[in-house]
Image (cartoon, rainbow, N blue to C red; front, side):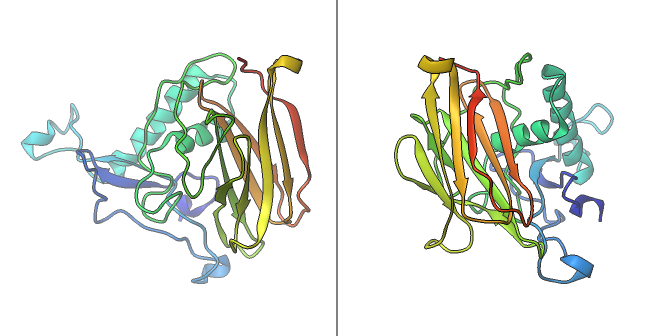
Length: 252
């Protein structure tokens, strides 16, 4: 299925009225593994958006003829992506996707799950120029580190060569430092820190070291303005140290 591919954003359908229950017809993951096998698939969908909505063509929700289905949910995500790109014309598709995923409101199991993905679509207030995307907040949980006085949100995903994938599990060490484990809580996979280097070169710095060779995507978000930085370690490659002293030119 097209939405099973890693490059596609799979969208689950939620009722448009709080508490936003998942629609019964909304497909759940994981995807099939290599060759159609049951195991080894990826976590899908990626985001959740709204169904049973009022439109000019279908009429008001209250009339009983509201726009329903994932046919309603998907255009919400597409429209949100268009607005984010319109405000940040220099962004790549990956940056746009990361912004939507990191701003989603987590639902269901903590982190990305096979029912809601990263959670319910929330556009926020993207602002153009320099790749910023509006302020957000960081709430620490099992898959999220909130570093440097809670200003920087850090999340990771991993994927094995056999297709198995998941979210890094976050553990805070200090105000600036934390680590992630992937497969076992006793087995640390990567350590990182976000430092305030504003007094040195007017940047916030990101340092990370890994003890793994699986594919890793680390997303760091400056919640004061929505700026996102993504770091990738390729599959079957020893994790290379990250020493990015120009990561975020967003001081103070």
